[in-house]
Image (cartoon, rainbow, N blue to C red):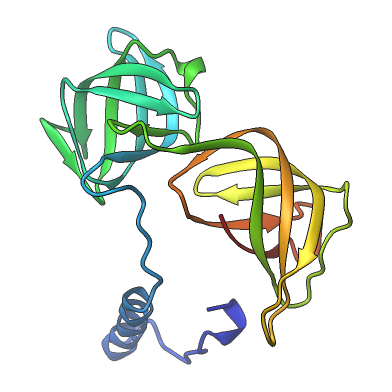
Length: 217
């Protein structure tokens, strides 16, 4: 659903009934969201948010478990760099745990991986079955009041926490009735990682509006 299709509520935040109305709307939109599979089966996936060194501990990352379970002591692979590391410890809300599960925000201490080897948007997983590429064709649905950029122009592809400059190589209209959709080829300045099919956005950081459209990888 685009922003313009969301209802406008006239509420008074000082009233309990108004807060309940707002909460019910948020839950309704959450329940109607598009289902997305972030990994295959029980394979683990952690999306990296922040990375920093801690004296006496080593490399620490903050992120969210998007699929499966991670366990202290197991070997994780960092993508798209394909480097390996050992999961030394797991913290959730500053409390030590032996494992982290789908949906939890975690802090992970890693051995064998330097802060320069991983960055925001990377994926940590026990599974090695990921799509890693720097050239991709996507299905792009143009957002209202936006227009398709010309071939050769640079824009940004946003996928998860990854934001990568992308050059428009070519595009062709998709034959879908009543929709402004294109198949568009992009050349990325660096590799991205994703699981087979994921939602993404093509944006123009200097444009008005900034969002060009919604992509399906």
